Length: 304
Ligand code: PMP
Figure 1: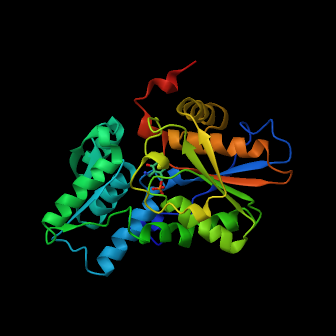
Figure 2: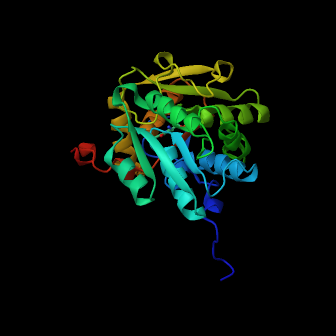
């Protein structure tokens, strides 16, 4: 049994970097690579931040077995928390907007988490208000990691995602493209990459409207809660509309065999726009944030 795994939190990170070959066929001398974050144990990039926040909570004794982890999420962080709490023997209560998709809510239930549904019109910002209110009303009952303000979130990416991309690209990465929910991924990864090489361009993908269909991604201009968004790390903003993101997710499935969600479609759409005007020799890296199974009931996949 010497190769058996005792703790599934050890499976977080060290995801593969995959070269996109088909959706990039029209490009000359520019490569796009995608970090397969959907291969993390719960199926999303948020495992990195959740793991760091939970372990920090346990180490600092803020999170003990008599407490319930409570936090707000658009879904993915909640699923990461719920999976890890189930594995470690802790309890979790997850505040999600009522309109989070069926897959997210079912997964939370499967992992035994309590779901607290919040006003869909206020999206993830509404969930933050509810989580905060509950946590502050009974601090002895709850552990509130608060992913929008917990430094362990961007630090997880600074200490892992950024280093992995630098190493896996053979130190050749020239551009990093990603969207933002809490902006933990973008800020943590970008700051580490710029330390390795200050000439690396870090490009923020943004949905083109506040009313977009990229679950988990924020339209920062219209959102009061900006998490770890740091303008000084944004070299350029590339806008993507929901149709493009959906179409690219479908192409990733059909032409690359990569079954990933719509924020991944958004990131790759933005990376393709960056590639159109990038110099020959550019190496663009982006993030495949979560697994397509998390969107399985969407009939987009049946499109001919
Ligand atoms: N993609 C999806 C589907 C997400 O749920 C999230 C987090 N809400 C992200 C991307 C962005 O991650 P981060 O919070 O690190 O900005």
